[in-house]
Length: 390
Length: 166
Image 1 (cartoon, one colour):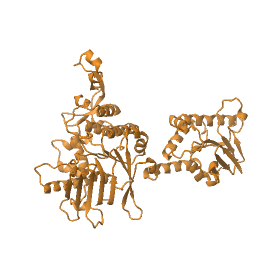
Image 2 (image 1 turned 60 degrees about the vertical axis):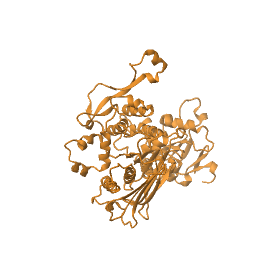
Image 3 (image 1 turned 90 degrees about the vertical axis):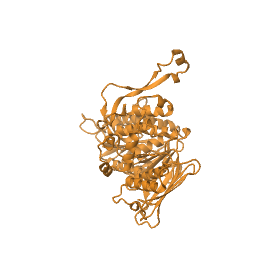
Image 4 (image 1 turned 135 degrees about the horizontal axis):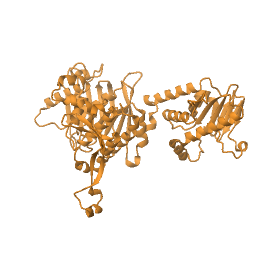
């Protein structure tokens, strides 16, 4: 778990300290306050904290993380110093502190060739593999990004590594055909089934090297391998859950709604173990609401809460009132739900970006999201009561 | 100036020709007509005012009110009151005045977004407009909280009696 993040003199940030909830974190702020940069910084730090493979020197690792940061943030000039905050004099520092006191520190200055990385593994070890889901949907792009004939340079010119890393996670083999591995963890299988119910089917990686949408749902059936008497003794153990296709042809992912594909991404990551609470790291999701029908939002928030109850740490960035409000309405303190809101604001006098964190939804009244609705409400009243006095 | 009181709230209508306490059982007898709390009459319009005050410190059963709000029953009841009152006024011969329907909903924790939604629901539920009607049945229809009421009509226009001076 990531307990805290400290950022100094990096991209839009002067000095920023963030204490993360082990459950759900929601980053909000107007455009240009650095929400995506914050998510990517956390992602980069978590990658830097992964245990290095044996055959690489510290220098090679530092070069690779430098490359990764450049690939994530895509500055015009491919020099690590360009990721420093404008006008910063002191070195750039990015620190991540885990709940077990492990620390990852990245630092560099304007003239650095590569970043310096210091990993203090603390008590129990390294960071776990993080997952970053960018704003735009990726499922339908995977074919082009991973095709044998693809031109890597062109793909990299178009997509930053937020997209390319996710594409690589998506094509990892999943269990897809067998329900058995899913049933190992019934808590997660319920999430997977509900994701499939939400969009009426699943996306499958095909032998043609693309995702296709297959309409259907998961259904529990009696296990043919067990006798009836055994089944009566232990109903729970005697059913197998299988995906049952529902007529209709499968569709290429590009032919399905973009909002569905975003749900499909979460489904796929759960099915192939890229998201596996306890075994994998933080889930960073930039604007889950983008292209999602607001009607799907309630369910999505329920499922994210369910993942967090299973030990998944989540950091979301959002502009969406509906998503925020559902977290407020659906979180259950009795189930030990915990949601922390981090509001990024540009201070009026200094132009510096500051963060205000709160566990209390009611403290969010002055955010841009709430103000938008106040403005709408004011305008509605103005129109309705024009010229009316008591 | 006419001032009316509804439990813990006092509302001033400085420009009204008359303010009728419409929700009066003695006046309506055994009729099952639903009615708004007050009707303020002006030269060229009348304002129907319905007051819902769950923030009243002595309000009973606020959870039941919230349930009513969430289930849509509140909007249904608010629209019924408007329709029946409009019917009454029309038969009374006062149907030619333009009508403004103002619902005062004192519930601090209701955010602007939710008030807006309830208001849109109310307009559809009444309904304000119909394809076969020559004109809208109300000039406007709005749900205000106390803060917005004051912003619109002035700080002196409403006061919570239990809090003392305006």
